[in-house]
Length: 242
Length: 211
Image 1 (tube, rainbow over the protein chains, first blue to last red):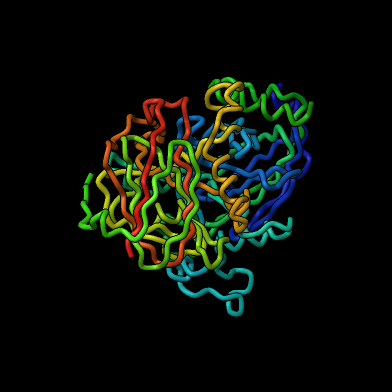
Image 2 (image 1 turned 135 degrees about the vertical axis):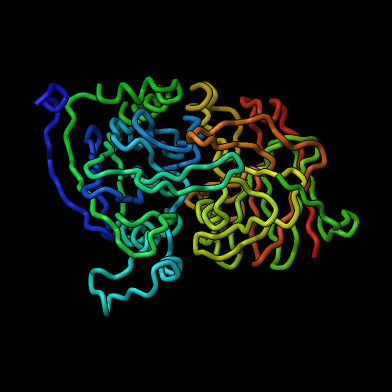
């Protein structure tokens, strides 16, 4: 066990099967590791302030504040209120997508064909829009609260003309991303294929969620210092607790 | 980059209004009407949100819009899709050639992050959105998602960088949109004074509507 791991205790672990959705409050100073178990997973993610849910992940503020369209270690995921909902403290994958969003039921039926519960039971064709909406409904949230989502483990690049290219093989087995919460953050996620993944088969991959308690927020030093903007973002976040 | 002119004559417009620099403006257009946004003095960010008038919970969805066209910039031919998967409007003319929908609108809170903590008390687009939305009564904070920045040039690089380039708009450049349903248009004519994209000089913009 190295020094870094000695400062962390694992609180819980759970596997989200492909197609699954879940939500939970990642409490201040907890860390969530999301591991791509088999390689080729995709996780659509939405974040909100657990204590004031009208404050939520703003990808535009996240992207323009850090001059990036891709997300990786050192980046912060910002709310629309200038606070850090989560800091990406580690990432072995290198590129998480902010462009693709999620499909709705009609788009999934067009892409993969009909896949009803009646025939397929729990292997039925789910879609990111409904999965996230259902999970958000459990917190009394609705359509208003579902904004631009992040797609973890996926890469969409943009060429000189502005056209998109989905890059297959971005994430390998056991690649992981770590999200540290400097405030109480409601995490809503679903493990489904990226909307631009060209695979014509409905075959979402599982991911492993690992909750850890972090003894010191020294773990955020890379994110805090990556850009002066992030130092101010953490300052805004810490003001919640004065 | 392809520029497309419109044959529509300003004299024939059924409605015209000038939005002073830094002001919000909320109005409606009907299905079948054409909306022109006119950059009067050049490189003015016209931060815009679109909602279905029949169901204001249905709104512009940037990720679906980009995905459907497989391209990151908005220009002629772009169909603006809603969060429910329906076409809201189509860009039918564009003399600027590129518009952004990743950079979002400025806010007091994001200004503290982007520029300095003491920029909090400067005027901002999202304050404008809230003022107009709450004054209108059909929209609130939770309806305010990612907007379009008409006339702004925000390239994405192949390495995944997001850059804020000098504007490519100019006085008299415009973009025209055909409405596919009755639409609430919510504009903030951006008051940002900290960003060189508008030469630190917010200016008026005009809206024109044809039946």
